[in-house]
Image (cartoon, helix red, strand yellow):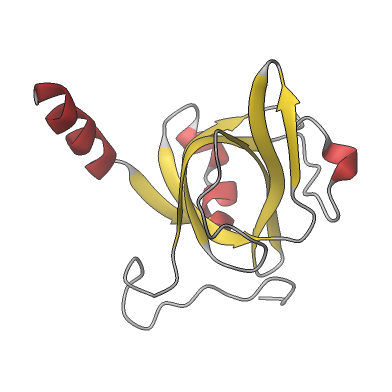
Length: 138
C-alpha cells in the first residue's frame, strides 16, 4: 500500500508540458521525468531495440516535432493524429530507427518514455486550451 501511495504522489508531482514547451525547456528539464502531450505523426515503427520492445514515432504540436522511443506496450487506442500523454525523460541522442520515421525531428534528441495514456477529450487541458494542429505555423 505504501509503495502505491509513493508512486501516486511521485506521478502527481511531475510537470506537464505540450511538446513545443518541452522542446523549448530541454536544457532546464535535464534528466527529470515529466509528462508531455502531443499528436503522434504517421509512420509509427514497432521494433526490438537493446532487447526491449519499443515504439518509435514523432510527436508534434504545430510545427514543433520531437522523436519518441516508447518502451512497453502502447495504449490500446494509440494511433497517429490522436493526442497522447507520455511520461519520461529527454535523451541527447537520435532514436533507433530514425530513418524509418516519415517526418522525424532528427535534432539529436529524443523522448524516452515508459507510460502512455491516449486522451479523447480535453479534461487534461485548461479550458479553452487546444493543441495546435500538427503542420501549422504558429
